[in-house]
Length: 247
Picture 1 (spheres, rainbow, N blue to C red):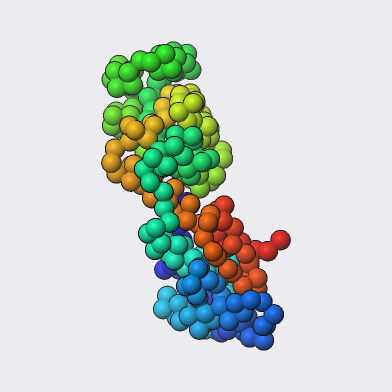
Picture 2: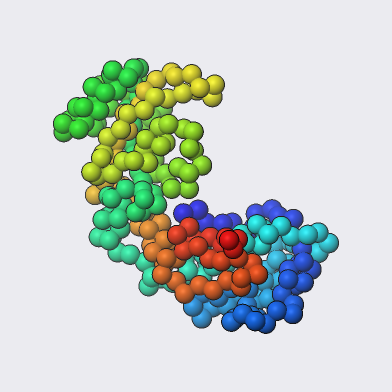
C-alpha cells in the first residue's frame, strides 16, 4: 500500500485544526486526534506536526489534507511495531495467491508483434517452457532487460483501470501465472502484444522478496492494529490503511 508522505505540499491551517478540536468531549479519547495502541496524537501534537511541515495559519485546511496527515501518523506508528509483521513463509503464501491477498506482485514480460505470436508463447510457457529461453528467442523490446517488468501494487492497479495489460497482470497468481494483452500508445493504437508471467515468491530476487514481505507486513499490522480516530475527522479503514470520511 502506498505510504503517505508527511512532507508533501499542502495548504494547511493550524488555526482551523484548533477550532475543530474545541468543545467536543463526548467521544472516548476526546483529547486525541488519533491513537495507535498506547501511542497518541493529541490535539497539541497535531498542531505541532502541522507547524513542523510549514502549515500557514491563515487558510482553511481541506478535510482530505487533515485525513492524509492523520493517516501518515498512523502508518508511521504501525510501521514501528517490529513484532507485528509476517514471516517469509506467510508472505510467500499470501503473495503466491495473487495481489488481492498480498497487495503487491512482481511480473515478467515478453513483447511480441501479434496476438497470434503472444498466444503461442503463452501456450509454451503454460506447458512448462523456460521463460529465459522464450524471452531470448521472441522478445522484441530491447529495453526490457531479462524480461523483468518489476513489481506493482494494488494502488497502482486501481489507478490504471484503463490500461489493459495492467489489469491482465492483476489477475495473475501461481494458479494463473500467464496472461496476454495488447500494448497501446497514448492515442489508443495497438503497436505490440505482451505475454505476462507471474513471478512466484520463490523466484524473486532478494530485494523484491524483501519489498513484498515488508508490504504484506505493513498490511497485516494495519489490519490488526488498535487504531482510534476522532470521528470529527473520519474513521480508520484497515483494509486500505487510510483515514476516510464517515459515511
